[in-house]
Every structure is written in C-alpha cells, then in structure tokens.
Image (cartoon, rainbow, N blue to C red; front, side):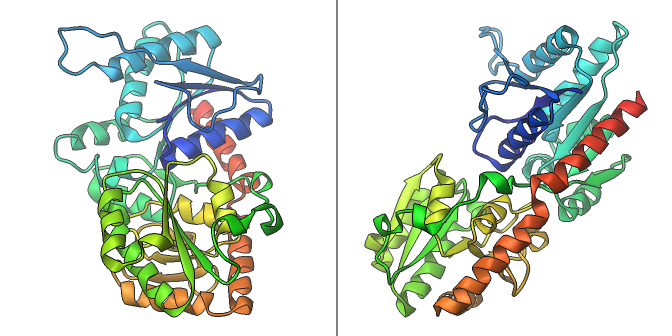
Length: 375
C-alpha cells in the first residue's frame, strides 16, 4: 500500500507513534509518505520506502496568522495525486483531520477517492478539542473520517462522552518496537549518573502542568529521605523552572539533574530504577511504556489510559491523582531491596511485550484494508 501519514513532527507522543508506525510499515515494504511542516524527530530517511514532504506556509501580510490548514490541504492534494496514495492516515483531529477532509473534497472533484483514517491521541480531545471554540470543528472532523481509532479505551470513552460522535471508534493501542529497545546495564555507564548505592529515579515529559511536575519532585524528596537516590528530569516546558526552584527549596538541588529535551531517552532509561508519572491526565501513558520496555518499573497516577499500561502490583503501582504520600510509599517499597526491585523490573518488561510493534501493526494494516473497502 501507499500510505500518507500526517502528524506533528515533535517530541510529543502522537508524533513519536506516527513516526514509528511509518517506519514499521516501511520495513514491511509499504510505501510511506510523511507530510508535515518539518522532518519528524525520529524519522530516518535511509529506508527507500520512506518519503518526507514538507508543508511550506507562504508569508502573506494579509493574514495575521498564517493558514497552515490551507497549506496542508493543498500539499495533501498534490502528494496524493503525484504518488497515487491509497490511504491517508492523520494523527490528531485538528488541524489534521480537518485539513484531510478538505483535501478529500478537492480530490473528489477530480474523481479521486482516498479513504481517511483518523487516530485520536489525547489532548486533541480532552484539552484542545473540548474548548467551545474548537468543539464543532473537532466533532465534524471525526464524523467525516472514514475510520476513527483511539490509542486507549479510556480515550475512546472520553471522546464519546465529550462529543456527539456518529462514527464507530476502534481502539488500537500505542506500541513500541522491543527489538530496538534492548539494552543492558553493562552498556549504560551507570556510574556517570550515580554511585553504586544510589537508586536512580526518572521522569520524562513536556513539563506541562498536567504532568504534575511538583508531585514528581515531592515524591523523590520522600524517596531520598529513606535511601541514597538521584532524580533525572528529561524534557522542557513551562514547569521546569518552578521544579528547579522547588528542588532548591527542599535542599535536593545536588541530587536532581535536568537534561532538557534529549534524543538519548533509552540511554537515560537504561540508567534508571524507577519511573514517575503522576499525571493529571494521560490518554495512554507512552512514557510509562517506554520505561517498562527498558526494564524500569513505574509509579503513576491512575488517570486516563495509564491503568491499561501500568499493571497494579506487577509493573508498578497506581494511585489517585495527587496522592503523593501513597506514591512515595509504593516507590520506597519497590526500591527498598535489590530482589524486589529486580522482580518489578522483569515484570515491567513482560507487561511491555504486550504492546510490541509486531502485535499492533497488523491492527493498523487491517484498519487500512477496511478503509479501502469503504471506497
């Protein structure tokens, strides 16, 4: 098949999943065309089945805000016609599904019919999409898609609750390529981060308020009171500066390392003993899954789709949002001795295997085949 993928080319979960999906499809000899405003951060163009088409938005003084949706729709029309695309797969309801629908209508005028699959990832529904200003456009875009998927059962339920949806929504969970994630602590140079007796705790996110970064710091503060430990903070965002200030106030500045954005997430997780994800909302919990596949157990909230990934008492523990005391207690319980820690690490890896790319990609291929049958 010839598949066009539209996504955000950033460090966010939707962009990562869309990029990894395209790479996996290319390995199966499908022809994949990425269409977005810059090359996705995880995209390697060495595979001859992968193509990247940049969306350029011309600057016009007439527009106060440059019309990306218009530029994207036009680029989609050109790419679909030139490369005879079979299926259009857009990640995020707005603006991508909205632009995709406009492209479909323009193509239909020329007798070209291309099915559109829309994958819902989270904030396009629970945050941006639910804003009264955008809600009609999101509802329209979802209902005009040929097939709609969501990355978790929780997100599907949120979508049906928040919007007047007429389409059936299929759950196709996020995934991870376990073959690409195999690491060994002998390769990690762990001593660069901590002494042998120190436990390493990690958090990775975009440092927005929904991630409850202050809870991460407070949980770690309680951990380090009970045992030697280091906290590795990976990511950038508005909550980074307050978190750094909080570390100074608690007197743990020398025990916390802020990396900013990093392309070496797997290397950092290789160092790690425990992953903290106390988020207020998560559509799936991809960060937790990436930790688990690196044999890192997880302390998390029970928000959104996280319980579909982090198994209570197996790969880690779940608590109500904001319950720092319980999260700290459970973290210490996992980290208290080597035998318990090793058990949780192995359990985390086994749970992650359920989401291996080999189990999920066939579901997407089946979705594409169903979309083609509609046309």
